[in-house]
Image (cartoon, rainbow, N blue to C red; front, side):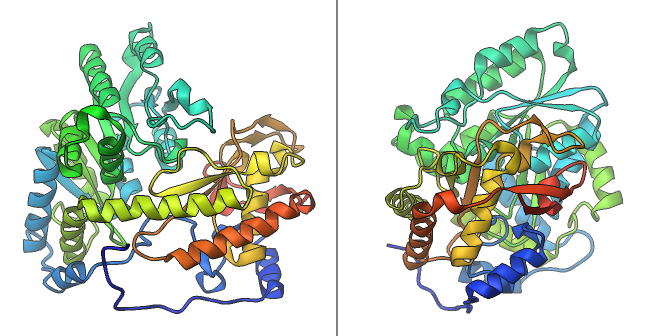
Length: 453
């Protein structure tokens, strides 16, 4: 059962099919542009969408809003340092701001950033720095149906080839995303982190963590990695951070807050340069674009998120939804993680070619049928076409992510999602694809305009 009681509720929108059809047409078939009050169940993202605890609200009331040197910052800094062990902690208003500050300072044009898998904003910030983002997911990640427990790992052999190649010095940093969101929310094993850290040190390349879901990764390590089964999630997380040279984190995920993030660093010279950019673009070094109450709520959330009871319930909720999805006749990326369930849209809609975006088609159909908003992670997200709309590059898999906000939805909401998917699966042949009529050069999936194909 949920290890909490509900004491504040918010009504959700109940709309008609006709209203949803009109809304989807108005936003050019891109669910990102829907108004929130047009959505019944919102699984677009788990970022900043969780429910605050009473303890978080309580400490937020004690937030110190001083411009510089607030009590809130020092409470935040102490908590983050105890967790991560990093020498310098720089707050930022969210994870992508932390990425921009780090990459703008650390990277030089022409460099390479290697990762188990870059997520969309990480890749964009690497590209904006004039660098190349290279993904090296482990071979097990290619099999969507297998139940290998650590599909989020980096391919160590491929990494060694990159670091040891002639252009190896061009590799500026290795970024390990835990859990691997772009790879289906799959965890990274501690064995893989240890070996990656050792290899990076051997070649003199820093290793950073994208630690947005560090606690969920630690929980899955305790569940599936034999050497860590008697460890607490907190101790596993502490060990993971201490293998790295630094981290970026969106606190909107595993700090369970609505806004915030930070950069953690051991290199004091790099930290000084990052701090200068932070002050120029985000805010003074002791608030980084955040209110004092935000800093206090992040600190409290970081303490709550590693509680075994919280993590066990989160795993059970994801498992419950995954079971409903399978029962509806829809395959998922196995095994189900904690923060999301990834639908295999390509398999459900084989009649829709990649350049007509089967993931987007399923995402739109979820909204039309049940008022459910989800995110496409397929060829709209990763693909490319020429000016005539002919495919140049397609995604390896056509997925739809059902991201689970923390402490927000109940099992009956998940039942509704399963029932909606069952109706779609029964008439899958009738679902149409889409074509792009307008897009931006990067991160096109956020604001692209589409029409039915």
